[in-house]
Image 1 (cartoon, rainbow, N blue to C red):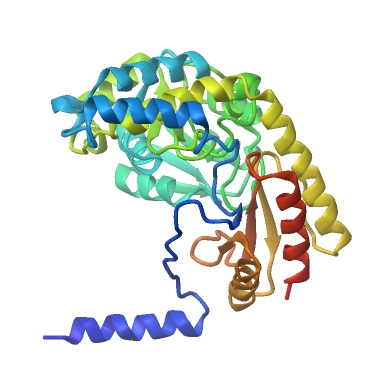
Image 2 (cartoon, rainbow, N blue to C red; image 1 turned 135 degrees about the vertical axis):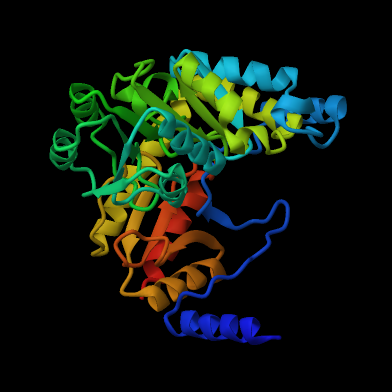
Length: 377
């Protein structure tokens, strides 16, 4: 009767031997750890306007949305956020989900009604990979950031394809060649799906994202997804694109129809964060200056790093055990850093992932750099 539990124990031991065991580490409110691991790039999670808006909505609506978007879960806050995101991103409309993961699943399943192939970048996030699998379509994995390879795949395919990429890749932080990819997809009648999670709030005019930075806002053959949990400091996801596709998701999108709506307090907080983020050029400038400082400091210490395209910088580690030990030493010295190992890393290598945060005080940021270098294996 317990054979299945014994099998899981064996798998856990195998993961431990490979240095792939993961642990939950709850943090207290107001902890003093210097955060170079989270995704609060603009430091808006605790911004006074954001917190005040969430508090007001909490008092008005209560804790939860109480139902899915099509039952009782849609509030005035949800509608206002969708309008604000559409205006910011320059799209016909947007649709808010309870997570970016669910938004990606919905989009990939949704395009299956009009496409017969998915071409996915080799370094795509797990949510996009899972979405490709759930689409039910044939999936071809294209070499990372290679428009010529995508061109060859589309040229050999007689039907309509969907090409899927991130704008800023979540592990290494490099930028996708979106303009070149769009030239390829438009020439072959394909759709371009871009997960803008790590670029929204940082790149493009007023922080409108990587798609906006590439001059592709509002194109009828471009679908944008993003999370609301990174630069906007909240939670949830968004799909932005042509109105007929959004209507298709409302009618058929399982992760929209059957999922409880995001809590109104969170949505109201994100709405306030959008307003702050659009005017936050000073925070974006600070974040990019810190990216240069971080790159220079690590380069001087002998680490092969490149200047981040947005807020993510990847530092190679000798192996999974070394990455875990490095991150643990940093944590013991009061600095939180990301530790990425297989299967989170697409190439099977391990690294620290450092994320920039404009809300970290300057003296703390300088101290964090010293700790990361001094704790290196």
